Length: 371
Ligand SMILES: O=C(O)CCC(=O)C(=O)O
Ligand SMILES: [Fe+2]
Image (cartoon, rainbow, N blue to C red; front, side, top):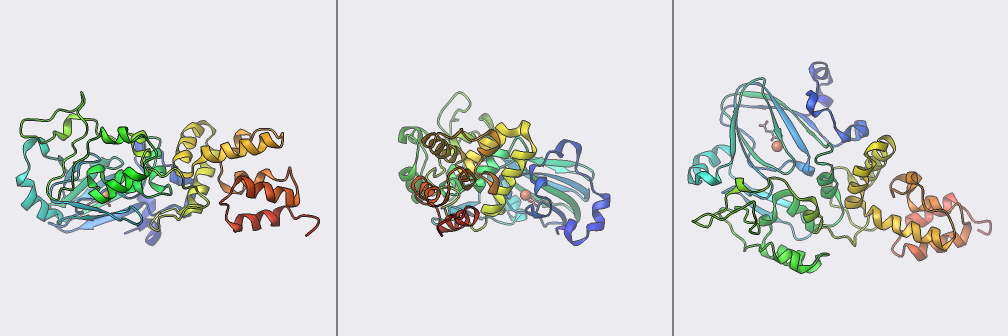
């Protein structure tokens, strides 16, 4: 239940724990995606295995009852769970037994080294679920919990990447590479912007329907054990953003690409969000810029703007204007310097795939004297 909206009175008794106060979606106020819930469930119920949406992280505080939790790091698809990556939009669907079924039927099959992180949460306790982590919950008795998803400095880039146009990266981010079936791997390999060798060295295996345990390249962090299974706890738990970003289709940009329909913010929302953070948090600009490059190809747009400025002997876009988001800083804003038809021609020349809508907008802003 989204209690903040349906029962706003409850907010009087609600505060975000001190250590989770940083939340970059808060600049969106009422327009932020759904983010906090009251979760009530009877004994034996519970959330089956999933990764939280948008690669956000979450905290979850239990008010009454006990919850059994199991967690796996990103990329470790739990035994008994199948992930399918949609060929069209790269989104994933997860086929999972109920949490009770999982504990009864699959848990006993796990070797010790492949067991998840587990704990029993008691009333008053708060658990943190980091970005991209698989989790499954079993209510041992009737429980009431509050939970909130958030984006902060630690998961900002993952959230931006998840909202970026392009599809190959989505299943990769959300479920880990072994969540991809052979066909998707092939598509990714074809569209890879990076060196094929980099990709190959990951030595990704075939589709496996049963246990899918992450088996990354051999390195000092991870060793294969005698029976060939990979010990999930001996390597780095977190995503590597540079590695994930290799799967983004960098040819897509924020004006021309179709956006994933389930993108919780949407194209406009995403630009507005980044733009607000950019303006409101000058000290966080390095972080926002990295996120904007992942989500909007902001570096590509800055490059274009730079070329146009150079061509017309104009000053390079200022720090405030370099982020191609919002009306104030998208490429249209440059063209008060040129006028009328010439400006329009420049826009067309430099942004070959610019939608007509932007041209129309441009005409509205800088009408020519001869039209
Ligand atoms: O509180 C629970 O049972 C788990 C909730 C959860 O994982 C979620 O809402 O994403
Ligand atoms: Fe969750």
